[in-house]
Amino acid sequence: QSALTQPASVSGSPGQSITISCTGTSSDVGAYIYVSWYQQHPDKAPKLMIYEVANRPSGVPDRFSGSKSGNTASLTISGLQAEDEADYYCTSYSATDTPVVFGGGTKLTVL
Amino acid sequence: QVQLQESGPGLVKPSETLSLTCTVSGGSISGHHWSWIRQPPGKGLEWIGYFYYGVTTKYSPSLKSRVTISVDTSKNQFSLKLTSVTAADTAVFYCARGYDSIDYWGQGTLVTVSS
Image 1: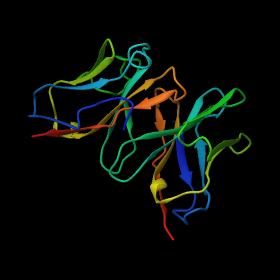
Image 2 (image 1 turned 90 degrees about the vertical axis):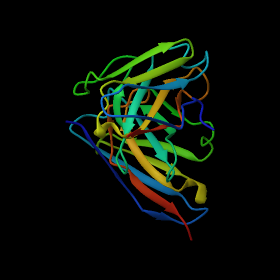
Image 3 (image 1 turned 90 degrees about the horizontal axis):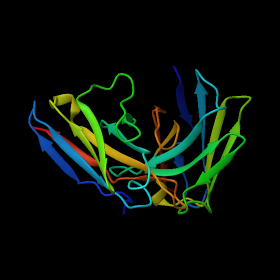
């Protein structure tokens, strides 16, 4: 069982927007800005898409955005494209004996 | 451009020790956190541990009794040892730079635990 809770799957049509949630606790997501999101295509290493809740690394399209409210962080992808179909994972710093906690992952299907 | 490359046996027998090395090129190990992360086939990512050279090393509590991460700065490499492996340790193992936001990943290496 993952420390952070994500929906197992989401889907959307090209051009639409989708949001993936990531729910933690007051010891991780709710307490820190250190929430990141990763995109993983099949048989590939994860790729950093969002760091510190809402920051995009260089080269990540601005269609990807992040936010946080309370113990829940969210990744929004607007203007869905076929290439966005992948698994998405959230992570957070945690003030426990496990300093890095992961979500279980969300499979995004572009219809 | 920083690049990471995992290397080591792809098959380990149950009860033996899994050993992997990560070679870093294009940048120094010093001044950054470095992590090992694994992903069982068809499952999610699991953090194993990280280090900041000369400062700290932290391990997942669930693996702490079996894991050791070591560093060889002369070769710009770091290593993972996981003892007493079982089939449940079968996974793709990634080395990576960072821990709360990982900007560089190795390609990953599949390690299968089987007799």
